[in-house]
Each structure stands twice: as C-alpha cells, then as structure tokens.
Amino acid sequence: MRPKYYIYIVSNRSKMIYIGLTNDLKNILKKHRSLRMNCTKGNFGLNKLVHVEEYYDINQAIKREEELKKAPRSFKSKLLSYSNPSWECIQSYWMENMERAIAK
Image 1: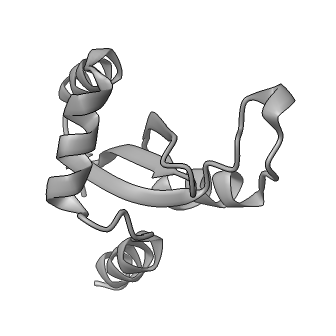
Image 2: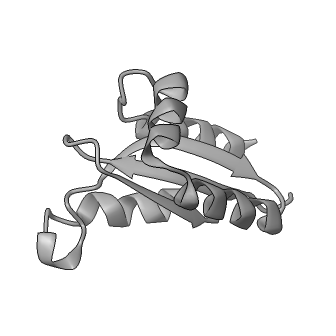
C-alpha cells in the first residue's frame, strides 16, 4: 500500500484556520483535539477538522500546502465554502473511512 499524505484544515468557532500536512491524520487530529484554547501558545482552540485533501506524492502535498498557506484568506474561505459550506466538523466521517480502508 502506498503511503498517503494529507493536507488538512482545522478551524474554531471564530472561523480562524490552520493548514497542515501530515501522513498520520488520525494522530494529528487527536493532538489538535486535546489542546485547550491557549492564546499564548497560538492554538486558539483550532480543533475542528473542516477540510482534507489526500496525496500519494509528498512533493505534490508540500506544494499544495505552501500554495494554500500563501493564498489570501478570501481564496481559503471560498475553498471551504465550496467543499464544506457550513464549516461542519468532518472528523468522524474521515475516521470512519480510514478505519474501513485499514480493515480491507
């Protein structure tokens, strides 16, 4: 099985966002969920998964992460409004699908 890399966006109630790259989505989301709102450490309660993109090529994933991080806020908002119009947490959906894929 080829490794997968994930570009993910987490958010909070104020719609602040953080964009990251990982090869272990399940573990990184646990870390985000376990953090408490702490403005001094820059976390701001960013624990709601609102967007995920999968890649098999690490170079493509890195390029996309850089592209998203450099993009203006309006571009990111449009992306999220298209892929997840209500900015709902999609973590349970992703975790269920990952568990099914592992079981196969």
